[in-house]
Amino acid sequence: MAVASYELFSSTEILGRLAMEKMLAGLSTRRYPVGLEPVGVQITEKATATSKSAVSRRFVAMTETALAELLSRDLSGLDLVALMIDGVHFAESCCVVALGIDIEGTKHPLALVEGSTENATLVTELLVDLRERGLDVTRAMLVGLDGSKALRKAVLDVLDHPVIQRCQLHKVRNVKDHLPQRLRTTVGRRMTDAYHAGSALEAEAALLALAKELDRTHPSAAASLREGLDETLTVLRLGVPPTLARTLRSTNCIESMISVCREHAGNVKRWRDGQMALRWCAAGMVEAGKQFRRVNGHLHLPALRAALEREVAEHVVPVVHNDQVSAA
Image 1: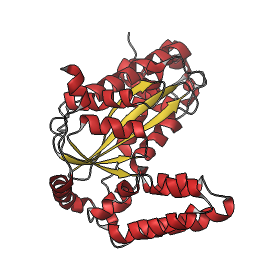
Image 2: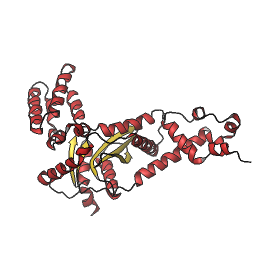
Image 3: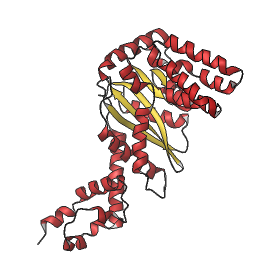
Image 4: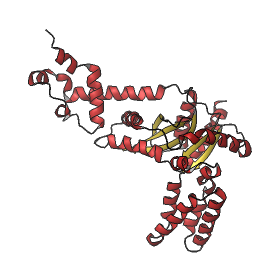
């Protein structure tokens, strides 16, 4: 006669979920049985489904499912106002991931691709996939990037009307990397103060004045400050209120999601291949999605949409995308 508690204990679906939850929480396959709720000696001895190999198989199956669901999700009903793209490395694999913020302020893990480096071809593949899954790339959209030229090129190649916001925190770090230790705090503070100015013109004037001061003694820092300066001021130029600007002026949103992926994969000792990196990264993105809250200042997102459309109408010239030219 079947024992009800044993059948429940060895249920494929339940064990699969348990395996995924506990391994993402850092429990190894070897110690997996220790992390289970006590169900009695007899049942535990019979439960071969909780062996190391069985748990590993179930974890692989569940993460494959998470990956497949993430990559097949229909995006046609998603009204994105902002998109963020970044890369995360797992051993020799680089996963480029995308996070969207919709008009209601809800964050959505969107997609990921795997390669050896964060290059334009890889990022283009990710963006084309979003388009093919129904994401409306014809609307004006704020795109948050860390300053990578590969990311920027792909965004301009695929999206119709991207309005790029370079991460201000990355820019501050990049400039400070060109300076001696004694100047880093002062320069960093001046840049941060400029980024919190009342207008883009005021911020630009302060940053250009700082760059001019650095020209004579630290020209590489000055050049780094000037590079892409206009794109670091996008949220100011669009008149984004401070509560919402705190989210959009940097890539912290997507980096927070990436940190969850890294944390969950922290106990992995051997990365076998790119597919394994994709599985773990997708599982981490799904788990991060469960923790997401609406962005602060989300009530200002409709106003941001209107500002983006004005920006596009005034400054952006439509282009023929390289990926479409190649296909033709």
